[in-house]
Image (cartoon, rainbow, N blue to C red):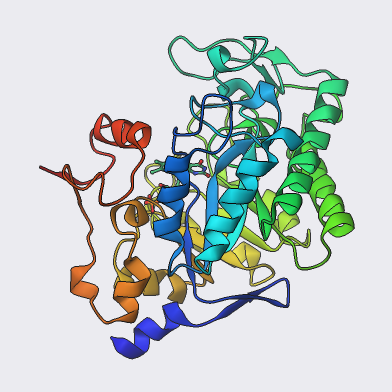
Length: 374
Ligand SMILES: Cc1cc2nc3c(=O)[nH]c(=O)nc-3n(C[C@H](O)[C@H](O)[C@H](O)COP(=O)(O)O)c2cc1C
């Protein structure tokens, strides 16, 4: 076991020269615990501090790039310079414990919360409501709104650089705006931003170009720019695995620092074709074919499970729920205390694990999400 575990603990390199001390990444997770004015809260800093010790890289909760994109109550903002002091503290907290700090950024699009955005009216690629009871029909974005939003992603990258982050992750997954442009469900446009799968890629590609341009100008080659995607949608029409394979074929040549999948179980079969139970990840990794480092994620709890994911071809392992339940995951692996790794959450753990109250409430009120013991 010890030798095999070394695979998880070995140093990695991104962008040819940025050192990462091991393969373990804290997955981006919304805390719902930012201050009401959009600044990072003390509770969030404490939550990150205990989880930044040990892991190679921390990807923060997703922040929003413009006010119209706010997706959650208690989401922290990176829309303008006024948010810099809190963002700086967040970067310092993570880096102070020895991990790389990556700011995840998004625009919620039609999944933004109407009661949390200034106009109360959501926007998206097209005026098609999400398939969810009570959802608002978004307003179709104008050309100017599209251009402004692309710029907003660049601006948030600039703020991340100023705040001292080592990189940004462009959140193109989990049904938010970038995915909404890729999706034939939410994108019915017939201009340059919609139509064929190639045209539906244009918005995410423009965001990547803008962010990379800002990174190059303001930070240089070491700044990390990653991209997260969801492989499929259940809606009809919706993103198919074939769409995604075309997309990641292009993404793999974009000079990104890494690609990061978003799935609930690393080994899951197709969400659209239930008869196909073969892991879709195999096709994704075959398509990438080593062109860009890959972060695997999804129901990975034990070192054995993490090693299996590395052996399948991923270079990094992101732990989400597991790192909430066990902030000391890496140090327990390092010290050979694998049997002491917690894989459940006890209701008495909230304070010792530094889980902010709003996050804790969402966790305990969502049955089946976390393995909770009394
Ligand atoms: C509380 C919570 C909040 C999340 N928020 C985000 C987020 O802000 N951005 C994102 O890309 N994924 C988010 N996710 C998804 C996780 O990054 C991860 O992909 C998912 O939980 C599966 O990994 P796991 O099985 O290790 O938890 C969130 C997950 C959880 C549990």
